[in-house]
Length: 231
Image 1 (cartoon, rainbow, N blue to C red):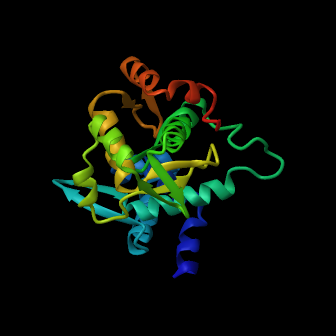
Image 2 (image 1 turned 90 degrees about the vertical axis):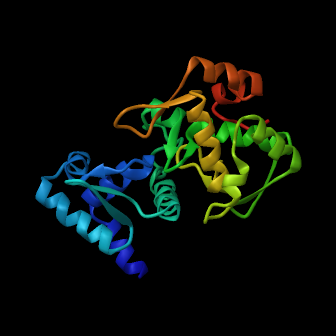
């Protein structure tokens, strides 16, 4: 199975398709052909293989066929591989050549990543709102109150059929951001309150004026400006 998945990921056009879907959106085959830089028939062949390999699922709505990543676990695996591949020894520091908007704030499937995600995680760790260990996380009582105050629906997160709270190593910052059901609910709260906004045709996010005010209030803005460095 591992060899089969590695074979699917080893083709550049398929890799570009998977990367385009990391933002959590679903796209049509024609749209993914554009992202992959191939013809529609070639994209169709690649998409069929990715669906058969259980990396993607296809959903039909009317006359349109939409493709998305099968699960958050698939997104996590791809993000992890990007961390490994992002910085050969001749390209230091990591992320030097990454588009600034993508590095500052982006969606990693359904949770926030980049400097924004790392800075939020840093702040929560520093205030003892979350305890991190072995790619997992545990919210403290104070952390649960903090997230509830931001409008995060923790009851919904607890009911999700996935890990409640975990972390990803951010592939540009090389440090943890919050993922799992808690990370997804946190991103949803930020989007609902328009503290962040999606940039069309990109995984990158814009931090809005009200979002920057909120991040300043939370003590996150300075850490974000400093690139998410730890104190």
